[in-house]
Each structure stands twice: as C-alpha cells, then as structure tokens.
Length: 343
Image 1 (cartoon, rainbow, N blue to C red):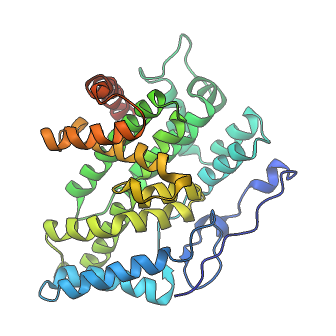
Image 2: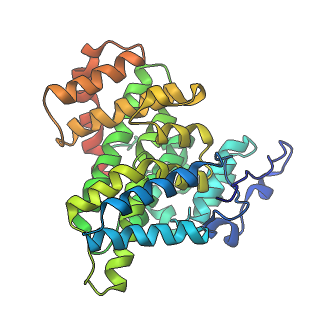
C-alpha cells in the first residue's frame, strides 16, 4: 500500500490570511497513493481498512448488495482515491484561525460571513432559547461573542454534518438515526469530559464525529443504489455489519482529511477498544467510549445491565465514580433535547 505522509508543519509566524485555504485545497479528496495534507495519519491506516474490506468480501459471497458496496469501497482504496466528504472551505478557515491563535473576533466573523447561509444560521442559533441573551444578536460577531469561539467551531461542524454528511438519499431513516446518535454523543461526551477535567469542547467535537465513518460508508451504499437504479441495495442488517466493522478506520481517515488531529483520529479508531489505543490517545479513547455508551441510552437505543456495565467500565477508566451515570445522563438529556431543536 502507498505511504500517506503529513504535510510540513506551518510556521507560527504566519499571518492570519495565509491560513485561509483556497477552494482546491478545501475540496480535495483524500488520495491514498501519495502525499495528502492531513494531521500526520499513520501509514498503515489505509492498509488496515483494506484488509477489513477483503475479509468482509470473503464472508459476503452470496449477498450481492453487500458485495457491491464493499466492491465500491475496495475500488477507491485500490485506485488510491477515496472520495470522502470535503470539509467546506469556510469551516477549514475557522478551524485554522482558531488553532493558529493569530486572529481576532473580526477575522473569525469575516470567515463565516463568506458563506451567507451559514452566517444567517449562526445568528439564528445565537438567538435561539438555548443561547439567547438579554439582547438579540444582530451580526455574526455578536453570535460568536454569545456562543464562544470553540463552541462556534463545534456548531459549524454540527451544521455541516447535519446538512451534508448525515444525509444519503434512499437511506433517510438510517442517516437520521446516525445523526441523532452523533448529537447525543457530542453532548454526553462533553458532560463526561467536564467531570473528568478534560477539554469539554474537544469532547463535544469528538462525540460529534466519532461515528462519521458510518455515514461515509452509507454514502457508498447510496452510490451503488443510484448506479444500479435500485437493483443493488444491501439489507439494513448487512449495512450495519459493514459499518460496524469498517467505521472506526474510515472515520479516522475522514477526520485526518479534515485536519482535526491525530489524537482524535487515534481515539476514533479505538473508541470500542480503548485499552488498545496508543498511550497518547488512550484517555481520549476512553472518553469517546464513555460518551458513545451513554449516548445509546440517551437516544434510547440501548438499555439494561449490559449498557450500564459499558458506561461504568469507561467511567472507571477515566477515574470517575460509575454512580455518576444517572446524573450525567439527566444533565445530557436536557442539553440534547434543546440542541436538537436548534440544529
């Protein structure tokens, strides 16, 4: 398999305008044949994904719909060009501005105002009951002041995921379920991160994107459905099998392409087996695991002793009392319901 190498680090002395990507950079798909501009992904990530696809293909010989989806993914891996959802240019700009530390509120507002629809959405969210203050926000700058800079980045990500990634024609019920779980996980992970004295904003972001690989895999199923005019379509159970096996590696490759950092990518890979994560990402992996398990209960997807055991084990690994689970769930539930109305 080809080597995937990181781009050279940026100089800390760059002016803010140099952090703005042009349209080609912002929309470029991941090319696994050569260099890609990412946050230093491991070279074996594409190999592991490819090997998992091959194993699933061997097990799905008599399931043509499932085989067609796997073939589509394998073709992209073999040719080196996985067509992944691009990060919109405006969000990359905001992300880089915040990470650079070399910006002011006007820089950030101007970046968002380049997308009028997004700017309108941000002002509307700032004026919603979830964020509303004494005076209505009149501009993007007002919205950022009210919401906060890091929260602004997270809200922009949520808007993008909701409108562009968790939306696959023909699979509306599945994508709706994926979106609800992503939103629930963003809230539960942030609540747990606060208790564990970790960064709550990174917790929110991690919960939001931890299962993004599932939506991307579903988009391959959508491609197969369209190209075959509906003749080839895996059953929902088959789709969940594919997503279950491949989503973690696929999600890490997606977040690599979105410049969200190797720690997050590694945590996504291991959010179902945090004990196997590299030391640098192990605590974040346990956080995502805890948020994921609690989100299943929040969205009423999973109940009972097994669900409680999963949350308890993850909380213990974070140094938290498992008895906090009920309080964490109630705190997250209120935010989940209110945020769902906004987004």
